[in-house]
Amino acid sequence: WTLTGFNNGSDAVVSILEDSTATLAFTETGKITGTGGCNRFMGGYQVEGSALKIMQLAGTKMACESPEGVMAQESAIMAALMTTATFVVEADTLTLKDSSGATAATATRD
Image (cartoon, rainbow, N blue to C red; front, side, top):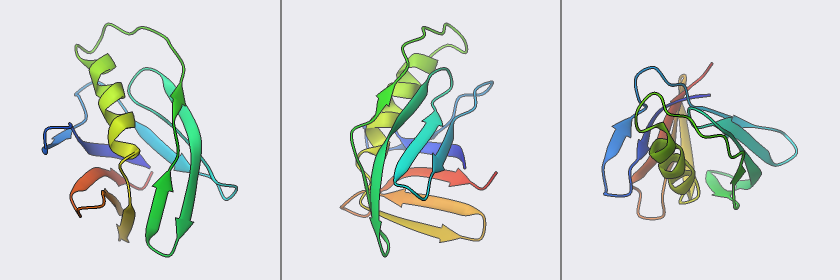
């Protein structure tokens, strides 16, 4: 999945920074991996029906200076992903929602 937006922690869904790519992948063995624009992250997840719980995520620690704001983007993406309570897939779009039903993140199928 290619992330297209994420909740910035201020109840607003914002787009991925221009000139950066954020990704998300789920394995059949309960692992989640991805990138936030610079570093890779990884963790575990559990799914039951439309319920989705993403466990603590860990990431690599490279420092990237461009595009401006990419390090803050990565932190916000990881925080948003860990608020996920449910998911919906419609056509080629994945929407992750928190427990209140607010959008945590959106992605399109690669």
